[in-house]
Length: 268
Ligand SMILES: C[S@@+](CC[C@H](N)C(=O)[O-])C[C@H]1O[C@@H](n2cnc3c(N)ncnc32)[C@H](O)[C@@H]1O
Image 1 (cartoon, helix red, strand yellow):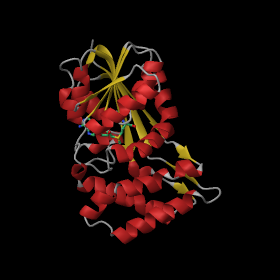
Image 2 (cartoon, helix red, strand yellow):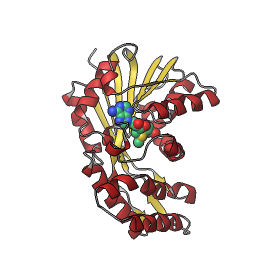
Image 3 (tube, rainbow, N blue to C red):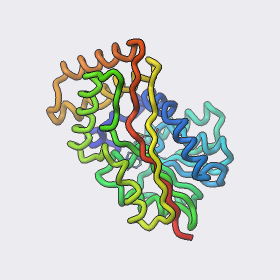
Image 4 (cartoon, rainbow, N blue to C red):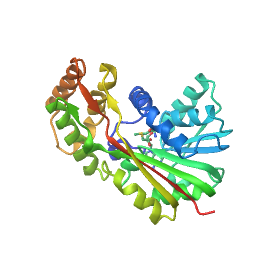
């Protein structure tokens, strides 16, 4: 998964700015999810596919004495560690994948969490089963992930409609699941989780700086869009320019994808 040829969104250090924006836009709904489920304050918290590592930093700030982020991409892990150090956080980061969960010190966590990761995998089942292996008996597994096609704007913006269409097509073309959200609860139950709870949130964007997430994401998916012949470079450049200009139009309202938030417990 570290190889951009198999990953719909360009990863690595060049993507950190975009991940920083996403972390800020997702933070309110994520914090509400973590608070509602009682996930904050336990001693050991693991964030799988942590990206810039923002959620582990927040878990550490809320009292976790061992807040850990794991990510398949070593460059991303180095960036997360540097960011946490800059923020004075005790969160720590390791390079690894779902296959590493449940072994070494990646086991016995009070909470194992993943956001916007399962939508990049062919299916959520094995990943969720691995998360259950990394949590202690009675501990919490939390996943939140997207249904990308649910993005909307008012008024309707054709460039956004086309961008979403290209995202969904490119993700499916590389075997990812841009529509995984509604399948998460079933995956958790099938993996043996108990007390599974589901909620749905959809962050709203109004500020130009926030609305630009769609232009930045269009840039970030250019490689798989081109590789699968879904659009030309000229169309991608035109869409990015139109999405940037649209973000500055007065009165525009748009959303991020719909997020499905699912919590379950490993049987005690
Ligand atoms: C879209 S980013 C989400 C980052 C972070 N969870 C967030 O919500 O801000 C997906 C992250 O998952 C990581 N990733 C993808 N496949 C993975 C795997 N199999 N195991 C661990 N990390 C993975 C990527 O390197 C990337 O940093």
